[in-house]
Amino acid sequence: MSDPSYTPPKVWTWEPGNGGRFASINRPIAGPTHDKPLPVGKHPLQLHSLATPNGVKVTILLEELLALGIAGAEYDAWLIDIMEGDQFGSGFVEANPNSKIPALMDHSVTPPQRVFESGSILMYLAEKFNAFIPDTPAGRAECFSWLFWQMGSAPILGGGFGHFYAYAPENYEYPINRYTMEVKRQLDVLDRHLANNTYLSGDEYSIADIATFPWYGWLVQNKVYEAAEFIDAQSYTHVLRWANAIADRPAVKRGMKVNRTWGEPKDQLRERHDASDFDQ
Image (tube, rainbow, N blue to C red; front, side):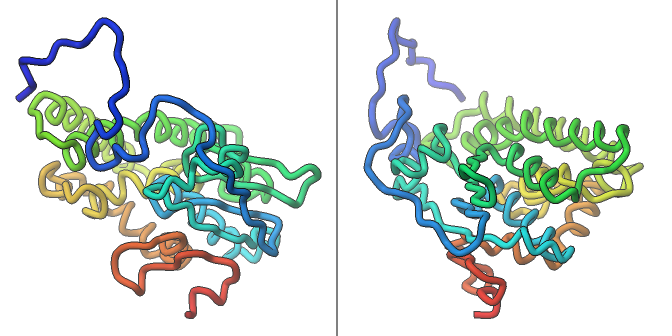
C-alpha cells in the first residue's frame, strides 16, 4: 500500500541517504566529486564498466566481434565500482558526463573518441566493424527499432519494477503493481514477436538481441531481481527459448564474466586486458 501521510513539499530538497540500497551513490547534481584520471591499457578500445545488464551489452558485443576474427575489437575492460563512486571520478565524467556505466574511449582515432550510453556504444562498434547490423534497409530498420525499444523500455524494468520490487526500503503495493503490469506487457510484446522470429531482427542475430538479452533474457532466467516466479516467467516460452539460445553462445558466456565482482568465482573476471585472462 502507499503512504497516505506523505504530501509532496512545495519545493523538493535532497536528503542524503534517502532512496534504499543505492542511496549512497544517488544525488541530484552532475559533475565529478574527485580527481581520478582513467587508466589507458594496450588496446585502442578502452572500456570502463561494470557487469550490470547495461555493462555486459558492450562486453558481449566485443567478445562476439573477436569471435569473428576482428582483431581491431581487442579491448581493455577496466572496472568501475559504482558502489564506491568511481563513476564520479573526473576522468570518467569526462568520458561520460552522465556518470553512468558503460563508457568507451576509442584511441584508434585522433583525438580519442568518447562514446557513452550502452545503445550508442553498440551502434558505434557495430558500424565501425560492419557486423551485427543487418545489411538490408528493412533489416537495419527492424534492428534499430528493437534496439531503441529496449533503450526506452528497460528503465521501466530497472528503475521502476526492479527498484520497487527488489531495492526500495519499503514494499508499496501501487508502484509494484504498476510496474509489474508494464513489465509483463513488455514481455508479452517480446513473446509475440519471437513466436515468429528466431531473433529480434528476424533470422539474424544482431545488436538488438545483445542489448535486450541482459535485461529481459536475464529476467526470465531469474538472473535479475529474483522475480521469475513472481512474473510467471515460464509463461513467456518464446522469450525463454530466445534467451537460452543466446546464453549458450561462447562469446556471450565470456562477455558476461567481464567486470563482474559477485557470484561464483568462476563467473567473475574483474578486469579484462587480454583473451588469456579468461583462462586464469
